Image (cartoon, rainbow, N blue to C red; front, top):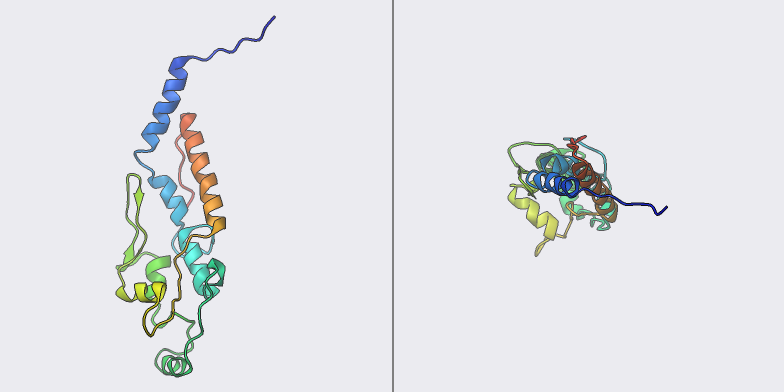
Length: 167
């Protein structure tokens, strides 16, 4: 007796419909990728940024240059002993938490992440008299983790399940 493979077209069509419906709102997936406020999980966007600040960029493969001697003395007098790129904490907080300077809208299948603080771009890219000190980068480990999340999300959709964000 030969084994028979039986596939109902309606089942396949329903699985694809479930997956297509899910692509209309990827917010739960994006919430997981962004991570919780204050996250230290380096696999999330927020946690990756926090780790970049903690490691002075080495966690994202872009180690920051130390502050110039004169600026370090000036900063110490004005702000006390604070880490590189942290004077008031506004930049860090706008990226790792949510505040008035945060940019992280999620609409449908689009995510924009960053800050409205104009000086952030100068630190991220560097400038004429300012060395580059990148804090926003996507690491290989994040890409791998996000691929798994996306795969699980769509696998659940194909099975008619609604995947909820953990973050």
